[in-house]
Length: 387
Image (cartoon, rainbow, N blue to C red):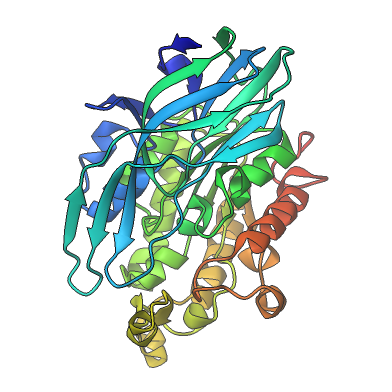
């Protein structure tokens, strides 16, 4: 087996790479942006490698990747299955595996206290691949922090670039991050990118799509041909702001992106359907009764009457985003709006309910991707090649 050092030229989908004691760790926010927030949730999710992949060309029939995973475990709840590594050969799924071992962070949901346990590196391996030259992508787990240690193959590898594919930069919540998707290459943004023939940069940040200025500046400074921002659910379930702050914050976020991308197609996407927060403000919380039964589900704890005082709900956010985009589009013809209910609405919930009352399941991710492809990339959509 040939040991190839893992360097940045083999890696796509991250803002930067950190050399750790174990190996190479991808970050989806640059260091200066991470330094502007003390929020442990943000620091956790931006280091989870949603949309990040190792890309190379090779005739290898066997591939091995050593990595150290950092996984979360919640006290009193069953451990989630380890994250998957998807192997794509010339764009088609050719294998899936998981890394054994790794670090474990145990979180007590009642107190927020976290305990860290250090574990060893593990290996994913793929064999029986065709011996012809091919493009290979290894998509890293969206729900784990990954330190890449070593890459081995039975034939030489060379890095490949994105060629001339347009770059799509997308920002959103845990739904865009990938929560409840079957695997890293089947999150709805990953599937939509494949459908649209574009190169994905996924800034879906679980619990952290909060109109943070440093996120807008990161997007401003990132080269991209297409940009989308999915705004809403995290602002409700964190109960972060009122309508008075929301409207100028949206304008400011879009203004900052436009400072670096004055004419790039920019699509604002409102929240998908989520019954607990349609008309009930946040904050959102774990359903404690369900937790006692070993299940993770969420509830809204706000009072619907507080909408009159400006508390946000998904319904009020959709209306305000539609108004803001319509107002700005008079001066900005490359700005577009997509109602999230067109991706997943009330009828979809009846057929494919949210398993934890907040996140779509694997089938719903696929449905959302297909619809986004039709609404954004095809015909007269915001991202249509002739649009």
